[in-house]
Image (cartoon, rainbow, N blue to C red; front, side):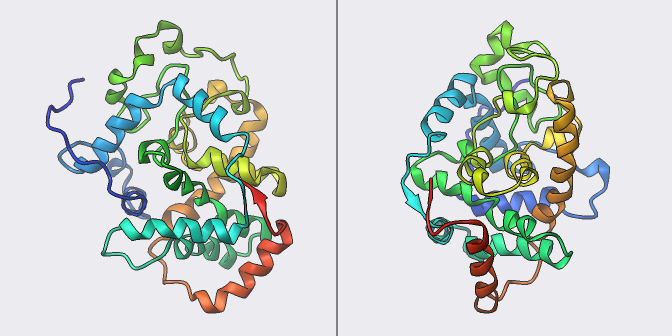
Length: 285
């Protein structure tokens, strides 16, 4: 499918991405409204996905896994990472006055309000901390956006699937079969997803949280799978079982952004205690 020759500006900051997600998946939308994406209606998002789909190759993902999975960015506390992420607000949309920590607390407070376990509440607070990748110099198309498997055929349930025509992997016949480099029902732990903040924060905190949290963190942007049922041919029975936790988590991620601004002064003691319950003073990033 042909794409426009006019170069559009990509998203300016991660907050702009959050605003897009909140609108795209806002509660109460009709089913027919969900898959309407074109360059005219949202050119910055279209340009974001043009870059994302052209550059997220298997080779690129393997390089990023090799670069970041060993966790060589030094030691920081959870609070230091959250405050570090807050520096992204310097380039954010001037129409929003919420810090990154406040965005995280909106999600975790919605989870807390519904009486979920403390590890679940903490997962809500942690889920976007992987966006510190932007502050390591990574482009936004390698940090946010819907994730998808590389090394096998692209699902038509991925946003803007036509943009994969510009990805070199689309010319590799081995990578464009149903299973590609994988085996049937091999399990998602053996599948390479496009690189981004989900995989990074999972790697950073996985030793401190239970397995359901691993799935929530690692796959919360894998919309073609958890919203549309794609890639089940790669999932193991255990993945299918654990994805129920992803389904439970995502409404809090998507629909909490419009909630009231959290009272940081009042909430900080609770979150300080919650984080200290699960994490040491510093962890490796």
